Image (cartoon, rainbow, N blue to C red; front, side, top):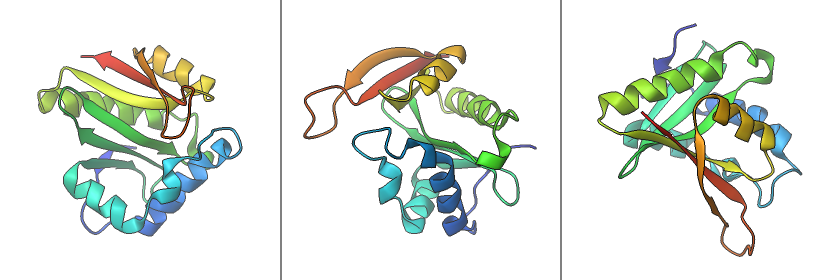
Length: 152
């Protein structure tokens, strides 16, 4: 399936449901809880305007949020439905992220991964990302998130 950019008339509640399904495995594994709990359909619609959202499938099986930062295109909310995992959708969306970063003139992609999600660290390392920082969420005295970058 070919990735497509989200338009203004997407089913935002369904996209939110997809993200929650895809991230369900984090429950009880990460601390603090995922920011996806603060997502709303309205916030997702705003992301589609202020940044970009790319989707695969109809109904949607996978998504990624792209947000311009000062020196990189930030990759967020990469999510694949449990019924569509291990079919290359995440890799296809990451390829779109690279294409978009180049088209927008960014020298790198950047993303954050929770410390506990070591399988995600390995996945992004296999895609050419390298850890560049460790940060703590407000109120924590230990690293809770790792920043990864991929130069383009």
